[in-house]
Length: 329
Image (cartoon, rainbow, N blue to C red; front, side, top):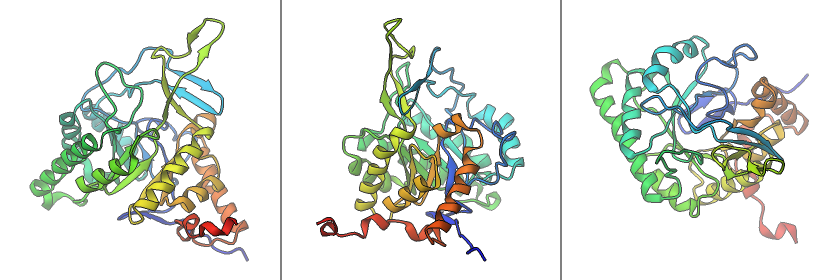
């Protein structure tokens, strides 16, 4: 008789049936993956990042293959939160998926406005991811993630927006404390300082990491492949970088829930992120290669656990930190 494998995990107060989520920007705004998978099967579906307004993104071409992964310079194109709430969210709710909204802004005020716009529907959301780290925004927008002060200001503004809404709507709101996950960049100079400020400002979890700024040049045209010159690199080769960020963050903040993101393609990849200190993972580039990647990785994780006599995925959390340095001598 096969041993029962429990893939249930917790990201802070959020309990998920399994740790495999989509990464923002890789599964669309609502039900784009429905023809391929049951959206209620993954731990959660993270929607593409939204601003308070419609945003056209960057000019084409804005996606390119790259050795070990892919480059994108989409630039956070989106319909804006009001249109998403009206046209996309209802279809996503019908799938019974656990929904994580993702927001971005060019200023602290825009992040706050985005959070306020989601107040009427936050009872339909599992969590809110605050994307302060997109590396390919133009037209004056910037990544906040390199500045501890800026990240703290954004998270504090979002926390204030959500708290004010709770006080006004408490009687009608089933989800008073919408968890806030802050998505950070892999090239942040002082990651611990940024994480510390995010926690102080009210972050409930950290997502590590976003894509890495990179580029590729076409030797025939002698021009960069992307119209924006550089873009965000994601894919298999990003895993080692993101894994290090998770490991070091867990080492410094062992009680902080961490979501690992970067190069997840198999159950073994998920296990490695747990061993580094993550409580869940997000899958991005793999979905572009295979639209069923999310469910395939969940199945792969079950097989890996069974093969390695792991009955509780949560038992792996932080395992790589338990070894003493002299183990390798």
